[in-house]
Length: 194
Ligand SMILES: [Zn+2]
Image (cartoon, rainbow, N blue to C red; front, side, top):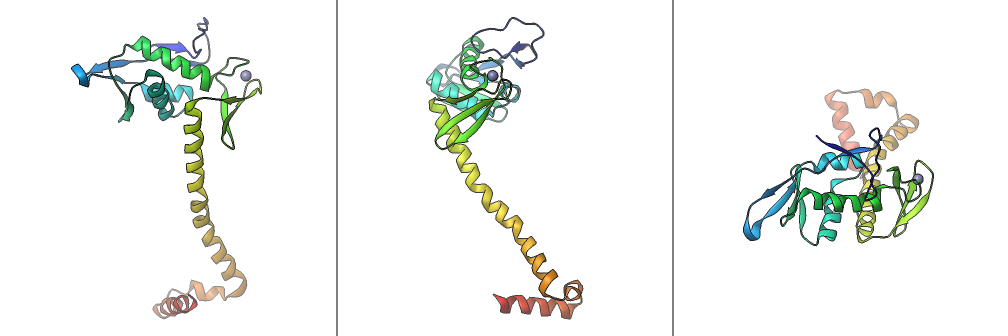
């Protein structure tokens, strides 16, 4: 697979550049009004950019003014496009979301503060804000994921509370007794306690 430097629209002419990504490999599917273009290696590209595929998908959709969706391992775009066109749009994405504006290295990580998509460059430390239609989507998805997390943590912490209670207030032997009577008694106790 042909590899190219991660450089956005300003090419980096360095054969030994450490930041590389696979060049876009696409295929035309269908014909007429139903013609589509599939990016066959979208997962690999996203992996090298250290970004999720959905960001590429949405950015392409917004900037190529068409519909795009993830389908199995491919990214399917409505319409006929050549790889150069898609590469150009992905370069635009890299410029905005992956490269640091100061040192131009793809070392930018996201920081979520309120409604903005803040970034920090792990190489030079430059902090920035990405203002783009896609930024809002990224922040919203991050918030939604965050909302789900505390529920899981709560469930995980429950057993800890029970163990603490057993150790301090109750007879530990009682809980290690696995006889039928003991199990039945324990079930009864639990029912009464509710
Ligand atoms: Zn930087």
